[in-house]
Length: 81
Image 1 (tube, rainbow, N blue to C red):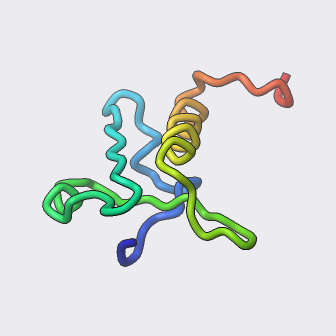
Image 2 (spheres, rainbow, N blue to C red):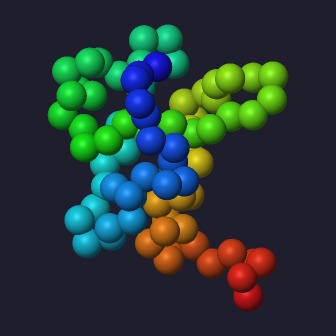
């Protein structure tokens, strides 16, 4: 948990394919080391609704990668056809 994370869906840092992106994922118990987080351009969160307030790291990775690929136009949604 960090102060002032940016919601994944609006994080501007994910939209620049030319610049690239590195996604840092932490251990489900201890998270990401503070020194590593200080080197990051942004800390994002995946909003979770309902009874649960967290996702495991594998779920977070897939959601984050999907969002990056969607923004870069690499994911063609069947709804958009």
